[in-house]
Amino acid sequence: MKLWGGRFAGATDSAMDDFNSSIRFDQRLYRQDIKGSMAHATMLGRQGIIPKEDADLIVKTLGEILQDIEAGKVNFRVDAEDIHMNVETLLIERIGEPGKRLHTGRSRNDQVALDFKMFVKDEIQEISNMVTDLMKVILSVAEKNLDTIMPGYTHLQRAQPITLAHHMMAYYHMFSRDRERLSDCLKRTDYMPLGSGALAGTTYPLDREFVAKELGFANVTANSLDGVSDRDFAIEFCSCMSLIMMHLSRFSEEMVLWSSLEFGFVEMDDAYSTGSSIMPQKKNPDVAELVRGKTGRVYGDLMTLLTVMKGIPLAYNKDMQEDKEAVFDAVDTGKMCLDIFTRMLATCKFKNENMYAAASKGFTNATDFADYLVKKGTPFRTAHEITGKLVLHCLGLGIGIEDLSLTELQELGGDFIQEDVYDAISLKTCVDQRKLIGGPCSDTVKADIEKAKAEL
Ligand code: ARG
View 1 (cartoon, rainbow, N blue to C red):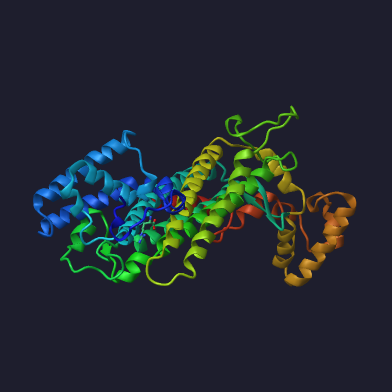
View 2: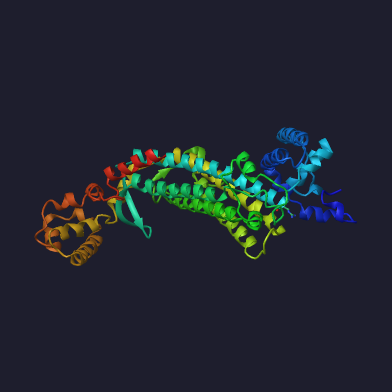
């Protein structure tokens, strides 16, 4: 018979059991569920709500059930619906009457909210550590490439010279914000919901603070309706994961581009590349492509949760059972991508000469030429126009600004142009002179890296 079977005269159809049951995915919460029940039972015993011996026996047996599950000795039952009733059923099977006291002053509604929050809290920690690992790899690539000049792009057109270190540190800061967002999400997840009951709390003198403390929560929820029906934490978590994936995806897109023959900026290690079943020469950046592709899944998980929650009245509704698979998928996908991307990046070989060669073509020093004219007294708008005409002239000849002779430069740009112009528009100067906070100058980026290292 079902744990809730008393009110029913007939049995459920087995198709209904299959449809209604969540055990196939929420068994993943067994540890949280059992730990939560242990804390609840301990508290019930301490408060004299159930006999102390019963509480002790429940806690002991739950510990054994936990071990058995971990040893693969437990078969969960679809007709016991979910992880909560499966664990409770196992408990009652093993100890009988005392086991039937566990659910005193509790509902599956506050129980599932508790389990789910515990799960998300653990994952926030783990994912945050993985983001940190990626940030460390990014830092080490940056440190080695403070002077590796490459083109910076806008509109995917070569724009101005930067360094690989500067480019890497841009990603460092994105992931640093992602980590902050996770820890912020943790703050709002850290509210213990047991004691909310089904929706209206309970008349038993539960010690909610004790349970919160036992389970490592900083606070207890302040409203029982909200306590059972809030899934903001799951949505916020999936939104954090979506942002992480979006950043990984942009990074991946660059890795795909950079590993092409057209760019030739990077070569991925064989360990993280694939070949083609027909074209013998191929080496494909599948890691980066898959990460980019999987980003859509995680956005989908976020959209699933937002959509599940948008129209349901207070408090608990069964729709909310749909929350778990979305979060599990965001966790699994995100962790898999973080892990493999970090490995791939750590073993990448950057082709510095190709980056430099690319930066020397495409007039990436044109802004600096205009700025040279400005320093000699020309208004910027005029300097811009003069430089534009000069670029057009060079395009016709298939050469760069620095390839023009001083006489030619003076003819086209003004006779105040001196020999020092060549130094002013060298790629090294273009980078070195951009020393404002945030710029690519190697000392500036170095300072940023030092600060980052101290923070990590
Ligand atoms: N399996 C359910 C879920 O995941 C647990 C809560 C069920 N509550 C209920 N009143 N039927 O949401």
